[in-house]
Image 1 (cartoon, rainbow, N blue to C red):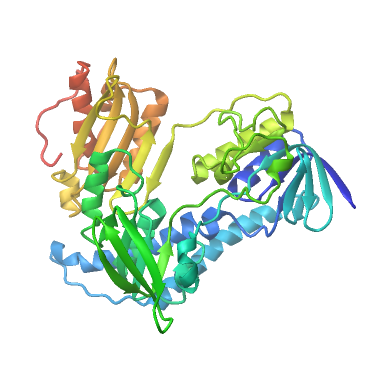
Image 2 (cartoon, rainbow, N blue to C red; image 1 turned 90 degrees about the vertical axis):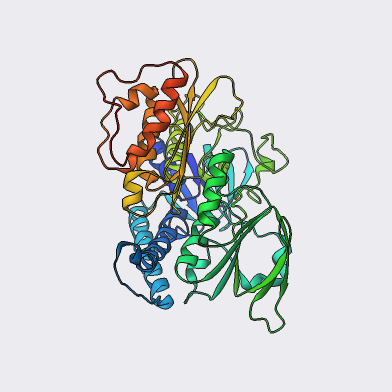
Length: 473
């Protein structure tokens, strides 16, 4: 058996794994990056980028269909084959960019194989070789979960890893799972003329914990497609094999035939079958090791975890950050130091956008104050005929320092960045209000929530800012 040695071995060449390898090598470690395919990151190949390409197509058709509200006569026809062809073409270009980056790695760093722990720092490779490292970074990512109830209709089940391979748009699609991934793709399909329905056993859309924003968001999205929450599902193949029959009970009941089902019920981490039981780590009922989110270290072992594999903040910028921290600490082990983490921040790219930032306060939280603003009558939103949405900001009752936000409204993917920066910088609602707000913009829609926080905590509003009436704010 051939024995390979290194300082840091990284399992997985996605966003987190690539960041970990760069970080470890930058800190003086000899590295080995092990991956089965080196086929691009989740974001580029099956996540962020292809989904946004499909969403962009849906938004283009939506703009045509709603042009009449502006006095513009327009008509359009969706060419499903052309839509999917562009999605794959541009997706492949993004993947090629990642692959070009991987190609620049030193050849003696990359190992194309499947890795499995044979001890805390020993990895058995599928090609028969064995890696002995001083420390290991787990960056194996995640994969779609398809519950057993769909076994009988597997040939009609899509996931976020297969939907983009459709050669044409289906006529109908049932979406199981109203989380961010499911709801983004559902709205895109509905806007492209696909008969779409969404189903979820839970009671909220997009995984939102603020029920007020969740209810407003549900109502807005339901104008474009049915979204049934709190339902139990049963599936059966259609007699001719051309489709699937879905029936539901609970808050509503019924049945309908769909060409395909998009199952978006979660992406659990890829940690099964990598031999974690041989490492001596304490594992929970799901086989997950305990780890420190500040250092990414698993227990006190020379094992670190990053990205979707840790099942925490499953977004690209966090995967990159976690990989960087894990790689640095793996290189310096046993000396391990905390990394600087950013405020939690996630965006759902439906229309309206949704953003969740920082800590989410409950209505009865005595230590917090909540400021609310509606976009239903907001000036710029009315100009653009997208005046719908609700934002809620959470602040420390002692001084009005912002601690979190849940936002559903037009273009909040942009304004949410401003709030995330404010929270991470420790700013109060007063300090945010003292910054310039251009008129007329969507960002002005946040001012009411900030002012109400100032009023409730008896904090001063900016003394040299006019709070008088401005048309359309």
